[in-house]
Image (cartoon, rainbow, N blue to C red):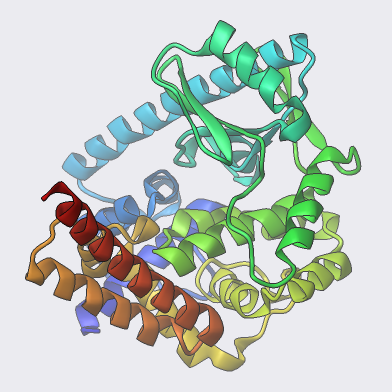
Length: 383
């Protein structure tokens, strides 16, 4: 990495932490200047533009962006606040309508996780994930189709997806369809039971309705696991890691650390957890005594993963590898590009998660081979 790239990354992380906590980190010296165009490009790649914009108010005048960049920030911030208000209102309408129909659900991630932030309206947002469980799923889906759906809809084994006032809603019967190899059935049962138990559930009011939230214990585990599955299957942005870091920064005292550690270990997730804990402490500013199993022993390996995360951007879409892996072409160049991406993935992830990296490498390789064989067979059948 060049000296310029290193400085840009350092400034980006410092500004990100400033936006998260509302103060310039005491351990970071003030630079002579900031490459705001470079910082904002990284922020956009990682879905943390709102948080970086929040940092500006805590900077001395000589470090603040020029008028042109400030005007763009202001436009973005106003749009983000408006979008979050719409999502909150839509979530309240969804929860209220389902509750009137006898279905109580729980919001996953998204607008619930935003409540962990110092300024919730400046967290970048997406769709709404709403868990209702297997028993209530069909009734909830029927209510949504009859009363709320106003656009295209489709269904997967995990959830029913529909449009509501321009907002995409995922109505979950399952918490996740990504299960670890170790004790997968037990893992699935634990997640379902954790959400269906009233212990530790929280709520807030929006759009005139009560919206239920998972327990702090569940969120500490689930937000990690959701981000981890994205990392090992394609890529991740820093917004997901910020979500997880905020849980521990503000609510570490509300989390049963002993129970959390037992679950991490029994489901074979310790390597991934330690990687994320390292990033949360050393790059996102969480105190190391607030996160269980913090371990800086593999700092060199972890830093290589951090560099890959920064380079790749949100869900890996901005990396050369991500672009190659999503290329739908069938030419030799495309195939070679995808093979190169697989090799890059293996070399990046193997030092941290050798078993998972190898398994995913061969799954993707075999999946690509299977697709090619299927295309040939279909072509032969047409002749």
